[in-house]
Amino acid sequence: MVRSRSQAPSGRLGGAGSLGSSFRRQIEPCWRTDVNTAAGFVPFRNCGEDVSTGETEAVAAAVGTLPGNNFEPRALLVCAPSSGHARSVNNAYEFDVVVIGAGSAGYAAARTAAAEGLRTAVIEGGDEVGGLCILRGCMPTKALLYAAEVFHLAGHAEPWGVRSEPEFDFSRVMARKNALIHEFAEYRREQLASGAFEFIRARASFLDPHTIELSDGRKVSARHFVVATGSTVAPSPLPDLDETGYLTSDTALALERLPRSLIVLGGGAVAVEFAQFFVRFGVKVTLVQRSPRVLHEMDSDAAEVIENVLRREGATVYTGTRLVSARVLGSSKEVAFEHNGRTVRVQAEEIFFALGRVPNVRGLGLDRAGVVLEHNRIRTNAFMQTSAPHIFAAGDCASLHEIVHIAVQQGETAAFNIAHPDRMREMDYRLLAEVVFTEPQIASVGLTEKRAHVRNVPYLVATYPFNDHGKSLIMEARDGFVKLLADPVSGEIIGGACVGPMGGELIHEILAAMAKRMTVAELAAMPHYHPTLAEIWTYPAEELAARVSAAKGG
Image (tube, rainbow, N blue to C red; front, side, top):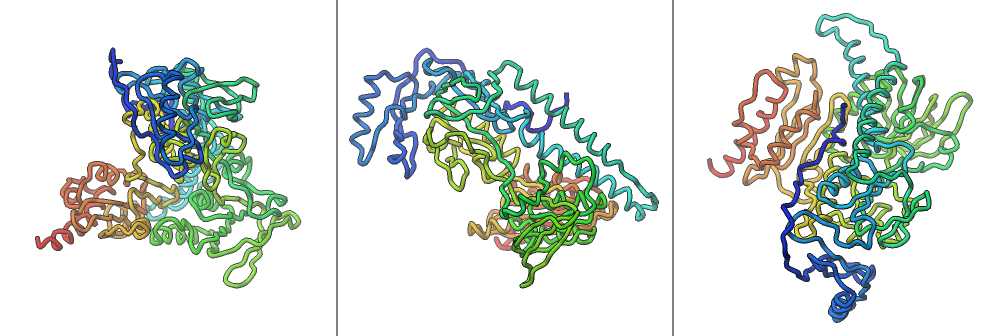
C-alpha cells in the first residue's frame, strides 16, 4: 500500500522507559501567560500522582494567596510520572487523550499518544477520511501539476531535437489523480482502523473543558484534548461573488472538463500553481492579485521569476488591484477591479477563488472549554497548549504555517507533551521549509531575506543563477537561482532558497546542513558529483566562505 508523507509512521519522538516503582511528587510552575487570572488557570501542577479532594483544597489555598489569582480546582493539572511509560492518570475520564480531527496533524497526535500508552480516541466529522493533504491538498494538486509539466515538456522538446505535437485526455488526467488519492485515502483508513486507538465518525463540540458532545448524541470525556480540525476555504470578500459562483481549490479537483477561460483571484501558492496548471492545458488565464506582486510573502527576486514565467507561458497577470464587483454576463462571468487608477473589467467562462484558507473552528464550542482564539485561529504556546493548558491544538486550525510537515510535527509535539509534562518539548521553526510547485519550483528553508529584515537578523547573502550552471543548461532549465544566507561572523547557514528545476528536492541539502548547523565553508568543502543540479550550492557557499574568512582577516 502506497502512503503519503502525512501517513508515515512516527517513531521520531521515541517512547519512555519502564515505569518506576516510586516517583517524586513536586509542585512546579506549569503555565505562564498574561491571561491566567481571567481564564482561571492554575500556575501549578502536581506531577506523578492523582490529587485527592483534600490535596486540591490545600493547593487551592496556597494558590489563593497569590496576588489576583482566581483558583478553580477544575484547572489543576495532574501529570503522568516523570519516569517510565505514560499511564492513565485518572480513571474518571473515558480517555486520556481525545484528538478532534483525523488529518495530518490529528493522526500524528493520535499515533504518538497511542505509542506512549495513553488511552486515545480520534473523532472525525468530515464526510471523507484522509484530511486536506490527501483529499484536496498536497497529493491531488501535485498529481495534476505533474501531468501539466509532462504535457508542457513534451510540447517544448525542440531544443533537444525532438519534434512532437502532444495531446491530452483530461478525463484520464483526472482519473489518474483520483486513483492515487483513493490509494492514499485507503491506507489512511487502514491506519485509523488499526486498533491502536478508538476511531469515531462524528462531529464534536465541547460542553465543558473535559467533555465533548458528538453529533450522534454520545458524550465523551477526556483528561486532554488535541484539536486538529484543519482549515477551510476563506469566505469571499464580495457578496456578489457568491451569487456569481466560482471554483475553489476543492471544487477544481472535481472538474469534468476544462473551462475555456479562467479568472484566478489571488496570488499565493495555490493561485500561481493552479494558474500554471490551467494555462499549460490551454486555458486562457487572467490572474488578479491584490498585493503589488504574486507570492508577496516571499523574497521579491523569487516571486519575480514566477510572475515572468506565467506571463511568458500565456497568462495575463494584474498586481496591485482592488476587487470591485463580480457578476454573470451572458454565458460568461465578469470581475471588475481597480488597477493603476482605473477600473478594469475581465470576462471568462469561470472564476477560480484562491484568496486563502481560514481555520476550521466553527461549531467546536471552544469558548465553553476556555480556549481563546486570535484572529479566528486557536492560540497556542510553544508547547502547542491552548489557553486551557490541558487542551492542545495542531495543524491549520492553530498554525500560521499551513504546511503538512509542520502540522505533523505539531501533532507529535502536542501528544509527546501530554505524555511527558515534566519534560515538554517546544516547537522549533528554525528549519521551516516551504515549496511552491510551479515550474520552476520555489523552495526555501530557514530565514529568507524578508524574514531576516523583519527580525533584524544580520546576514550575508550570495546567489548563483541556473543560466550559468552546466546541468541546468543541459536540461534547458535556465530560469531562477539559488541563494544562501549566512551568519556574518560564524558563517553558519541560516537560510537558503532555490528557484529552479526540482527546487523542492534541492532545498533538502540546505535543510540537512542547517539541521547540523553547518557553515558555508563546510558546505563548500563537501564533494558534489558533477554534473548535477545539487553542485550549484557550492558556488554561493564558496563566495560566502571567502567573505566570512576575509572579515576575520583570514
